Image (cartoon, rainbow, N blue to C red; front, top):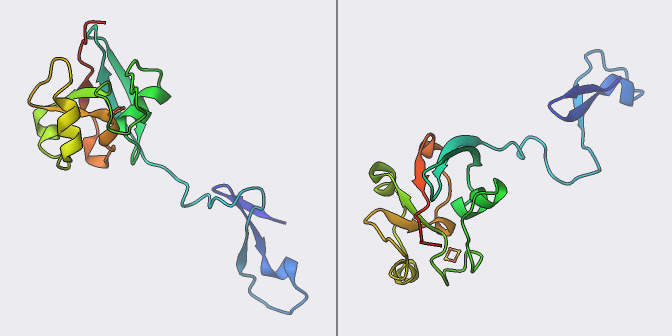
Length: 149
Ligand code: FES
């Protein structure tokens, strides 16, 4: 009889084979519907807060490794991202808390060029499509600046 644990099925060797093994060892049965390994597919999510243009705080669970534009769109948060993350606009402009901003990876020159076009640029502004969520960002708040539209 298969044992089901964490999305996987295990079948004891003794029930799969006619050998006379006296100590059955569990053998993993790989699900054939998907090539995705259920164990490595486990994702880490952390709570972060977007503060929208009106000042409303929106708490979301953000998947570690995704960028903030993707996270905003997954949660129907109004952050345009006109170029789809190709560093050809500034419509994914976000303002970070200082301690988070200081921990972010350095900007590439193209991001600086686009930020120069951003409305209400601050000294902790970055483009959301360029910032991937990391575990240490748990609890952070990011502001979506009011671009006047
Ligand atoms: S979506 Fe255009 S630069 Fe981020």
